[in-house]
Image 1 (cartoon, rainbow, N blue to C red):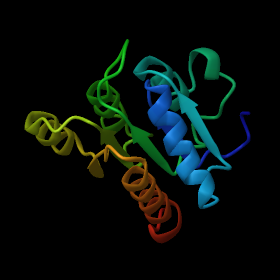
Image 2 (tube, rainbow, N blue to C red):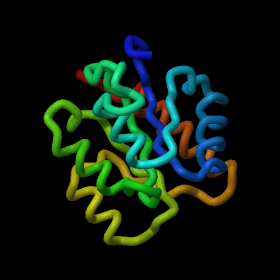
Image 3 (cartoon, helix red, strand yellow):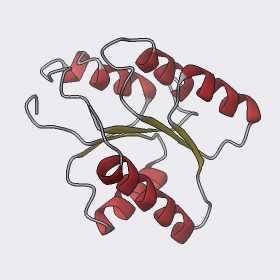
Image 4 (cartoon, rainbow, N blue to C red):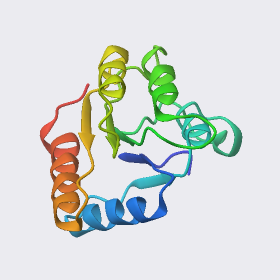
Length: 145
């Protein structure tokens, strides 16, 4: 795994939402280089090449991180804080994908440097469309250094 580039890191504890996201990305051929982790602690291990991911090269950063806010162990706000406060990882685009419409989460996320904040649509078609558009933008349209 340590030499394979990961384009999308999906950080989602809700298996139903994770499966819908992966299905939507697969439908538009954007899920080939995706890894799914189930909580914030596992996300931090992956991003910083620790724990189960210590054999991974930290330089092989994901092209985009799709991050839920409300998760066990470490919440998405703390994951975002650690990503954006580290010189090695701060340029990784992070998209908050959450069901939370709490204004404070939105404000905090942007203050920490989130690149986009998306409230998950409830129905599958809207959800799939939003995920597909995010995937196309961050993996194909957006230019990275």
